[in-house]
Figure 1: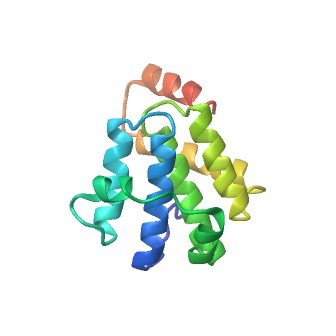
Figure 2: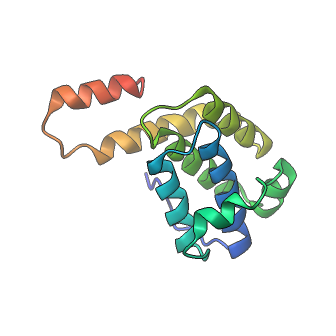
Amino acid sequence: MNFFPEIPLTTGQAEAMARALFHIAQSDGLHEREAALVASFWAEAGGSMDALSDLAQLAPPTAEDLAAVLDTPELRKLFVKTALLLAFADGQVSGKESELVRKYAHDLGQGESLAHLEEQVKEYLLGQLSHIHNTEALTQIAKKLAI
């Protein structure tokens, strides 16, 4: 399985995604890891080096705006997977983050596949840790992810 297939993004698509991701990250207080992920994504996708200050000045996209620019199922899945990864970035998915991710997924027609996408994200995250030899720590992480 290719977790993140290469999907080209226009600047408009990347901006809408970055604005929505920033909105999710801010929902429970902006954590350092979340801020770094959003800033990195936006800077690499064509935003300025002051990515977070730029995003802080913009309103989150409406459901209609996001759906209009993320106009293919592949783009919508990419966004939902990225939003799920962001929610896990600080080690704790808050109720507010979960609610926003679910709302965006539903608004983008990905509500029915959200559980499957969430499992893929958890498997991806655990796969990134497969080189760790401390099985006790891996077991604790897996429990935390509820796998």
